[in-house]
Image 1 (tube, rainbow, N blue to C red):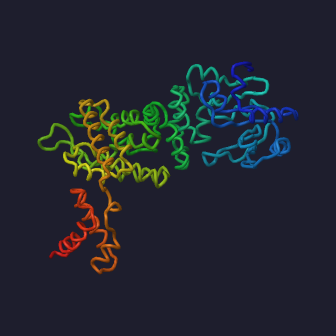
Image 2: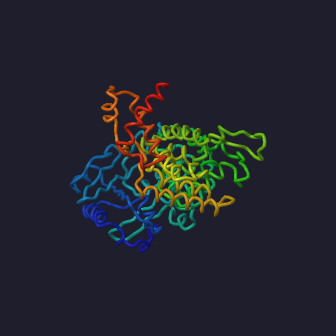
Image 3: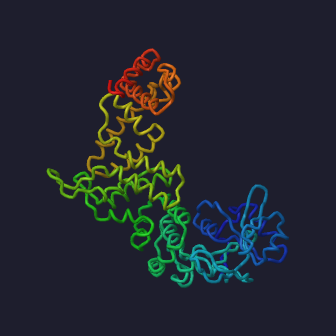
Length: 459
């Protein structure tokens, strides 16, 4: 099928056009393929460009010059044009997928159709010739784009069992594009979970984080639950399905978590934190506490933070991402009982760490949005933020590094060697300064050192 004029060739970068033109000038076919074609048709920005050709890898290198043989065993070379890089892959057929992720071997082919038939979904199995402006769509991917449907190429179960990651990719595409997954394709996801288990944590993480950047990531989480993927990726979240809450909530813990995930603004880690912020409730629930009209979850923030560390390790998140998520979950109730004094505000900032304030306020805003008493809670949150901003602007000392004296001063004053006592005394001094910032002078703090040491020694 050839559909001329459906894509503006002017949207294809010059370096991609030149690669296709140079290959065609030598008698080869060359097309932009995959997600780039899909996004061109959808009017979305294209970030990655791939070219498919019937030229063999050695012919691609000969014709195009500057190349890196990044995946030459599978027919792929990376072509360098100025500051741009494009993967150019020879038409290929694939053998069995013993590891549920990569083909055991490939066979180079001469026909575009055969190459498109090995791809995952029809919307990713189109090709565009940017030189003459022709769209090749033998598998009717454009019709599925128009119908907003994710459909596997060929037999859905075969496609899912070839590559276990395709189960997550189907969910991710449906979520990001706001499409539906065709019934047979959706059914195949649930019957390929054993193959999905072979996929590395890094690959799962990448798909999950891409999905969480969607406008409504909750739709993807629900698809994962319905197909069984969530039991394998975030089983801790599944435990909270149906867990009812108290009078301050209209939803169970799971539904509330979905709403917060959608509401929170920020990057994918913020979205993941919103999804997991109440993950510890199932571990800390007291179903019928005396004198209460609903369950309680005291300590769930600490339990949830510890669970997030385990989840982060499973997903191979970076140390920085793990620390951020752990800290935000551990302190997400920071504004539940706002401090009433200036000293209390200073202590709050010290406890939650100034670095995380913006993220914590955003998480808390999303947490109360849509709940009973939302406006009152948001007003209180805005008031607390103003008080914190005033404190920060005033420059009050908030951590040990801001004290007027340091460890060397303590050792010089006491004639003692370094040891754990230094940190304990500095923390004691900071407690006094948080209560009364005017005490942050060398003259006021040094006499307190002897007092704190006597207290520590029981004198």
